Length: 396
Image (cartoon, rainbow, N blue to C red):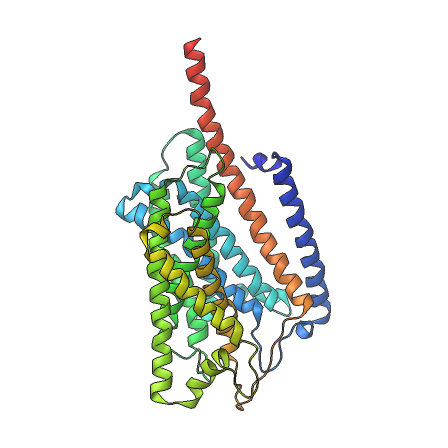
């Protein structure tokens, strides 16, 4: 079936070539970083985690698109999600791949990854993060590829595939939980040191992942082979709305705990993000945009007429997605590292080389997603044509 990725329209090849160019630029920027080190990034001794780790945390959440269609389908026999199930699983594959790449890129020497394989340390959270991320990537790839092969042959997936999909559900929860533990287990970082961090990761994941999946579904509804009902889109939109509400609630709990207790170390990161601190207010516009987007997205998704309006729905989903990205992919890391251990505010501005690498990783994820979706769409298009040809032959 892989041969299908080599056949497509001019628009398809234009998209593939554009992504390949961005990947090439990203590779050149990464080779430059590999030669000169992380000094080419905006990170420093005080801000040792930057956009690389922020993107990793966010895309681990995007991978939740797979679990949010798998739970209703496999555990509750909700057949409405069946057409979109494979797309959710393949999106999880691309998202986890991007997350893993950001971890590797953040290492000054990528060969150090092999140390976790050759000398495993079960007491280290990062070891378990690598285990669950790689396992979730492989499991979703096996499930999705087996499912599309069965669709091509016109037979139901084997029983073991169903069992593997159920196993992937707690595995999906674990990738978010373990990644959250990387943050919440960091002493000396008051913004990270909270028991609710795993809950915030899960709620934002259940919002951002399905939001992006719905946006892609709406884009691909123009293809004849993509069959997804309005009911499935509406159900996923409800999930996005409720998950966003929970995510906002969890953050407000953090705000209450920090300011009611009047502990300076816990108040300072939130003040830095939303009002600025010691004259440093670079993050303030982004965080208020995130807050406005979150509340506006919730307001739109809660109204049935707006949620079921396919022209207005994408705007609500984009706002929720951006709100989660700004909060989790940008604000979480920088808020945790400011103020530093000495109470100083240390600025962080990503460099052009750093942004080029990030764009290249995005392009790799989009290219993998494009190829996987191309296979699914072509297989379903072929299955739709074969019954039509058989009917025409019978009429003759």
